[in-house]
Length: 324
Ligand code: UDP
Ligand code: MG
Image 1 (cartoon, rainbow, N blue to C red):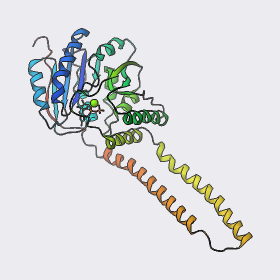
Image 2: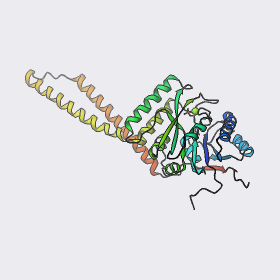
Image 3: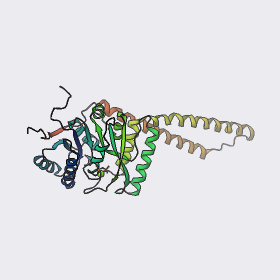
Image 4: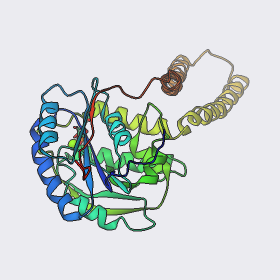
């Protein structure tokens, strides 16, 4: 099998993961088509239904019937955004560039024109960087800010631009590189960054969600952060080493104090409170580091099972073939 795109492949493919987006999809597609028409390149769009519980797929089918630019795919169940996105990337046929965008209109489709304008020779990634987070709560903004700063310090050599989501345009060769990374724990922002290649930023204003609601809550955000950290650095594992070292040094000092205290003042058997706090403190640290090791171990376990990333239920290509 040849990996070369078919001769009728479009220049640009837009990949859109969708989960319960039936209320936004129509508007999204109208706005997307309007923008793509102004860009003047051949294009198609892959809508991936990530096992939606509503009639998102029916809406997609209508769009597909009405517009030859539309390709659709449906996963056998909900696999999560990162994997739905990967399915769409697997199916994209573009020869030049691939655009990744959310369906909920938080990433305004109009910005794609700016992304394409910045997609010049020698640039492989044009990522959209948020100027303002209007739609998000203060707490979400603060946690997101912290997360990016922490990641910037932890992820060695892989620079993840701050305030950047998955919304971006990547070149065919960057996509081919990305598609070689088949890990199950897909922290896309990190994977995009890992691939490397020259990248430039385009600033935009992130809008509030158009309809429906974000499927992300704090628990999933926390897990997302954990995913990012454990997928891209083993630095936390070293914390145990240094913590152990620190505790040993402190205990030698404390041991000295006890020995000298006993020699100088006798031994009236003191120390229940200090004994208790040391035991509890060390117990806590041990459980925490064990949990940390568990996080990595669990990921190793999941990766070694070597299951396919997703199961396709339907896939219908676009009909942009000029002969059709
Ligand atoms: N999404 C998906 N599968 C999921 C959750 C979300 O394909 O399990 C899609 C969703 O339809 C949207 C994008 O991923 O197009 C971003 O989702 P959401 O708006 O919930 O995330 P947020 O903007 O809060 O990061
Ligand atoms: Mg959103």
